Length: 303
Image (cartoon, rainbow, N blue to C red; front, side, top):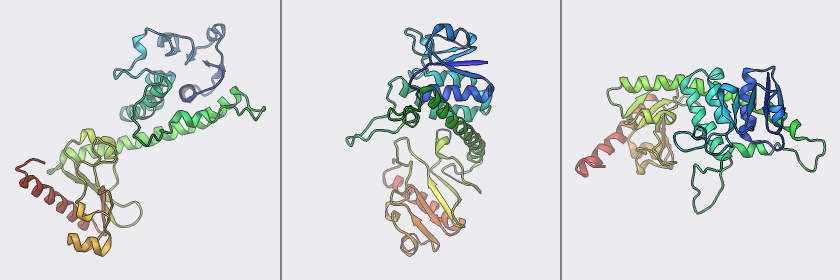
């Protein structure tokens, strides 16, 4: 097995594409070339060659006029996106996990490689540090003549492969927890809040939990319990943050405002509350829901 990608400087898409393939074909030889004669000697050609044809092992995205290199949302595939589409399930068989990696990693790498913005900067104009920036720093330093593009590409792949394995393991575990979360939600009498004996990836699966506002779980730091407010669609916002009067308070101050004796903390932004016991944090959630119900009644049923 010979895998070919382009020579010269490398980016996130070719490094991750080759890393994915090496997880499937660990004994494959990797060559880097822009010469058609070399491509013809390779079973898999990625991010070079101006051809996308999975039956021929060709996975380039640079050719003009090929609608197959576009995702349904208009984002153009990169070499990594195409490889993840055709080979990703061989190393990540869980469909939910595969889809999360496709959305969170492959799609953002695809967009960045093709010059398509997936976010807007505010008036502070702080740029996003993307996956591609992490990879590009590994290209040869001009001040170090010992470094070569091919040698540094091997270094980048050597770092990317364990990262991919860890990401797949993490997303596979998260997918199993997501299924548990969905089961709890479907069985709940009041779908506005849930209680779990372990922390669950609620914000990653919020689209499948349309009514959920809060989830109660044990803390990972100590014996306390916490309630997390589910994120809304806008960044750093919640569907229903905890009451404004609680925010930024802790211990005796929070207990005095809420009437919950073991109340410990409410975040300044209202996305989490903590109490010393499960009963205490459940009481805080019910108080927050009562405040919401009262607000609805005051507005004639409208929020």
